[in-house]
Amino acid sequence: MAHREPTQAELEAAHWLVVLDEPRVSRQDIDAFQAWLAADETHKRAYDAVSATADKIDAVLAKEPLGEVRHRRTRVPVRPIAIAGVSAAAALALFVISPLSPLRDEPGTVYATAPEQERLVRLSDGTTIEMAPGARLRASFEGDERRVRFEEGVALFNVAHDASRPFVVTTRFGDIRVLGTSFVVRLGPDGAITTVLSGRVEARREMLFSPDNSVAASADQEIELAGGAPTVSVLERDALNRRLVWRERMVALDGQSLREAAAEVTRFSGVRFAFADTATAQVRLAGYVAGDDVEAFLGLLENNVGVSADRRADGVIVLRSD
Image (cartoon, rainbow, N blue to C red; front, side, top):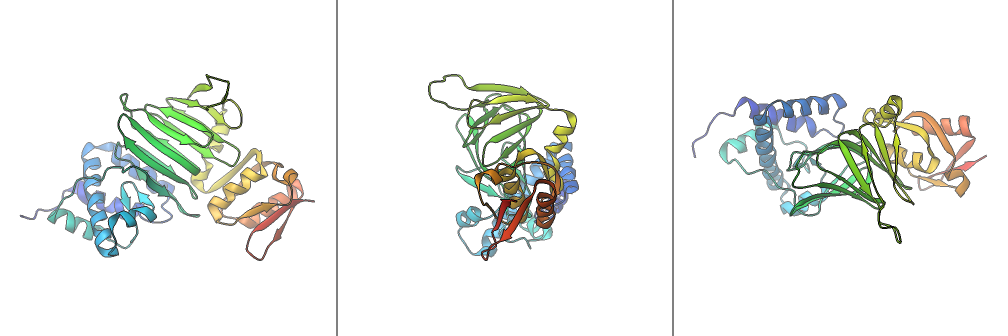
């Protein structure tokens, strides 16, 4: 096969592949990548081709079946990352020799982020999912529906419009359904909150003896799925901004319970918490704290709401009301 020089779009795609492979990719880099991707259709095609080629390199270097590699690696757009050291030049070298078709989203494909890790996932339909630390989901595109099982954490969805194939986010508290829009889902121990940034979102919770438990929300509104029927509320601009502070690695303590706040700090820091009693877990909080600054979080609890901390030998921090 005759070799050819890579195009400018392919060179740029290889650059982004390496940038997005960093465990702590910056907010600015993610925004710049999304702008580059939207600027020209050739950018999307080049990125798909180069990232698919990098998958092939990873599989060869890892000396493992490709299915196993995918199973345990976080995926950056469509590219698994067992080996972060694959260079852009190596990816392009293989691309020039043997271009591959872009990967499709296989049934049950798992995407996950560890504490202190953020990822931008790009699905085969063009949808992007910006995952906060400690998030986990499964994507399955089959038939006439695009479905994601959201299992943990916080994520920003920018769903590619497709009127013939709805996009459904399933949580343990209910389903979120769209055709194409932008929204944030925050899944906590007590419920799922969907903040609509643009477009229209529908949500539904199955309940016994209640046939219609569906609601709809538009931009600057929020849907809560919890123990009862779903509810919709209107957000003020400052509240909307607080829903996005996780992108700056911050936790907004906006009236949620200590149990919910501790779960978010765990996602950023990896530190686990327990509660001495139910009353402590239900203490309500307000303010901001860096997600990975556990000491600042404990100081806020002690000074503002009278909650102290005991450290167990296994690393778990036990919180109790004084």
